[in-house]
Image (cartoon, rainbow, N blue to C red; front, side, top):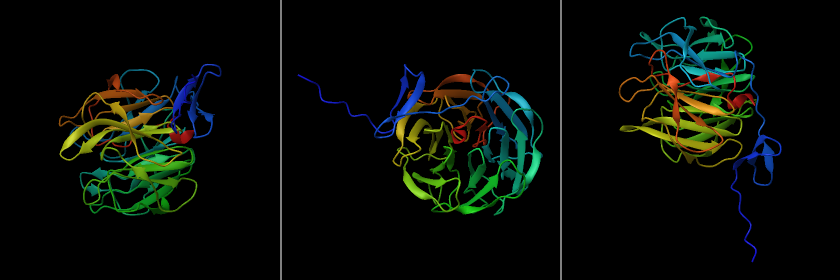
Length: 334
């Protein structure tokens, strides 16, 4: 007796042993996942700026995502601040907004990821001074979405990463919201969760090459804010965060090209919030955070699989309030 055909779920992933390539199922056929490995001091580099330890910090830390180990001192921001929005191309990491000791700022600065050194002036956010904007990017554009100033905002700004100058208006979230998790494919930006009057499980998306307000994508399975977002060009992940009144260890994932709700991936090694996520086509690394002590631990997952995170290394300076980590190899870059 023949067995019934196996139904392949949308977004399923496999390793093709004949082509030696990762593939995903688009609902009809298996599609090859295109990846790149930038030649940057031996591999893809993760970078995060500012934060709190517990005081405001201007420290920039970096590490090689393809190996396990600790961060190194990259340089400094122009001032001490935390809750900064971050986005990156293959060459630049661009930091927008944040909070200094004297209040919210509209400062935008950048670093050249392949080198080390202090941040350089880029421009200013076009809207309100704010902290906690979600950052995401493809190779051309970076977006900063939502935030708090101190009232929450729905505004989305964009920049052209290769140039310098002030951000421009892109559109709006469906509601004023802060602590949103952001990540992208080369075409689509995903904005998930956050706080309005209270926490929401909303997931929305934008087409990065255009301008306009967000459209509905689906919902988080776990209502989480203050987590880290990353992924490759196919799959996005949301790592750790906060669900009042507790920190969580949950990892959720979705397929960026489709719409729908998140699915359970696994857990990080410790419940914590307000850490940074940096990703390559292969790995996502969750860095630092608070539980309630400020942590220096770094956990990583293999994006194409599911399962619990494992130890990666340590921050050289324990840090939280660094929700937007960047890399030169994240999913928005192809």
